[in-house]
Image 1: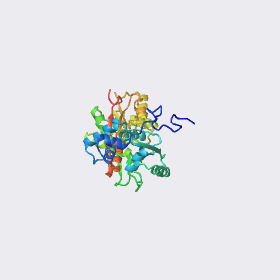
Image 2: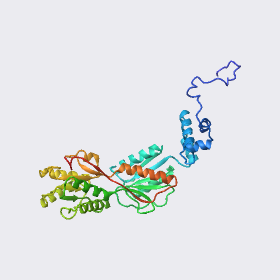
Image 3: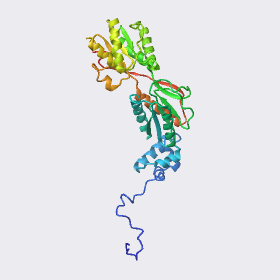
Image 4: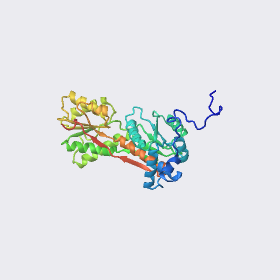
Length: 354
């Protein structure tokens, strides 16, 4: 037992030796409000981004919080606002080709609002999806983004207690909020580029015709050909699989029937890689004799192709950012409805222009 100079009673005015660390009082919201010269309620609204606070008042509160190194307690803030500061992202894309760029875009947007993202992989299984959704709801997420494995309409999740935004694969319910890439516009953009490169004998090798995206890309390409006064080589697009093997076989067939072909538009980068292999085997120069384009802009495939592959980028990071923005708006009580289309962009490499 420690003895004290005043007869054994502890000296209450004594301060611990490490006052600089343990003895420092935690800064509170009322400290911030006092320094800013506002009420605690106003300080809370300013720090939580509420619209009722004037810009100059918000700036004053933010400056006070920064000066005091104030960091709001997450649990307390969630009790005040009724929000957890987390959202759930459920993906069905097993390879991550489409979900990872979408997630990156969403995290960029959520990060600026200090929102955490909980990622779950449903692996294309509706039962697993429901399990993940219930688990996320149990964690009191403020909203959900659902990323599909293929860009075709999917069943709606119905009425959930939090807002839901569908990305890449739209909901079948027009009242839901969905964001998709513009596949029709992507096909159109590809043909416009090939025509601008001086190509006029253009063929199309696409993937699985059961995919709506495959048909949409062809439809956009045909529209652009028609506007340019050109006919599709062979009279119709060739549909098959999303594989390099299909791209090689289809290209060999095209060269046998139409040796004067000068451009091939492929429905994916994998198909385009097979197309490049077949052209090289046949001694055809790319892009000198035949220009080749892909779709998806899968970086590891497109950049390492021989030659590097011009492709249509689906702008998935922007899709993810836009999905996060729509979810923010819905959480704030302003939900969007229907399908919003994100324009594609051209990723230019040397397979179409020397």
